[in-house]
Image (cartoon, rainbow, N blue to C red):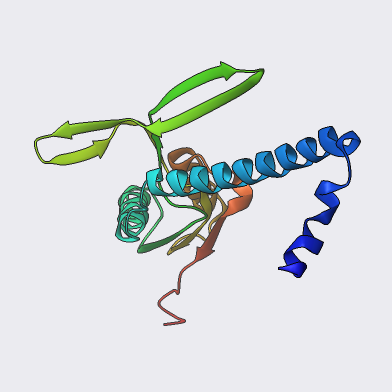
Length: 181
């Protein structure tokens, strides 16, 4: 009992210290409430984040680019067999609609965002505003006939225009000739 009395003895010193004591108690309580509020907010934000789609979507986009490029480049005069490798810097991104609500109270402005969801029977799907194509890091083209400067220029132009990639991200390499095979 004496330990507890000694512990709280500073509270009993005098009435002059009372406002200071209450300020300390209120300050400690306010800090505790803010810390708990931040923890709850982080948990709710984590649960609302959309889940990433499997890497299969990235492979599909990559193979689609490669297939379309190969088909187009095979049509260029002077090219023989063409092989294309596309290296993606990122994956496809979906921009989701969000419901936002703002409130002002006691000089504080709070803003809450939730992903907008459409319900179709038993399933819930997020509202997708836009699907952004993946960024392309580089393109490698191996083509028979690319040793000819004019053919190489046509291949470069076709790749840069089809994919919207700058020239410095495209490499065009001549394929093996019959003599080197």
